[in-house]
Length: 290
Image (cartoon, rainbow, N blue to C red):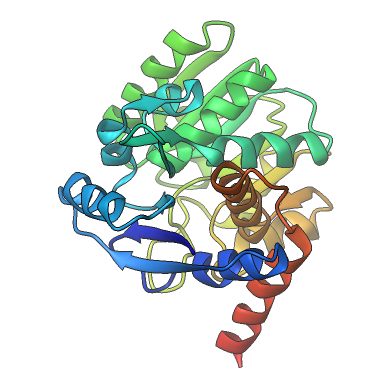
């Protein structure tokens, strides 16, 4: 039997168990996918226990993605560039290999959405923002601005990305205090992409957008794309504002599906049954909404 899990704190809200167990069933594989609450600083010890128990792979969510990278005996280029891993694969010779499938999720979604590399803005400076940044660097974005509550944290991420992707101009700013603050924050003229990579609008987070979503969307160029990493609720105020302006959007559920499918393929060596995975995600959300 294949044993898989997602580790994080909190983790009870995760949709990954429903998605990955549906994938196992659709692929005809006997297995279980568990949600495990693991406190910060405890992932290495817990991963060692899970290895002894025969677990084949793990997904890792907040706040453990940096720990996941640190404990791995081998790490992919993408995980190293992002400075974080969201997927661990047990190695036949022992220990874990680290990957960051969030990068592939963002890159694949942008390619499918037809985004042509142009100036981009990323809200946030954590692990999700770093994964998005690696994808933007790979796709050849000419410039990327990180906007975050902490300019210092955004600056650290910008400096790290400039080492890996020197062909992109990386910059950092604080979230503006009012509607007139976009220019002061360094918002690029003609921005063709906004990636929302902070827990803004997540149910229960209580974290507001730095500006009204309509103002953020209005600052984008015609035909721009908006990616939202939050998947609960499926349609955030930012996505609604972008759709009202006729901009292309990618929601958090699509990105969750893409990263989960990439993880499944790493663990099993089989193509991911994406239709079954999407159906499981939508069913969970329908039930929780009802």
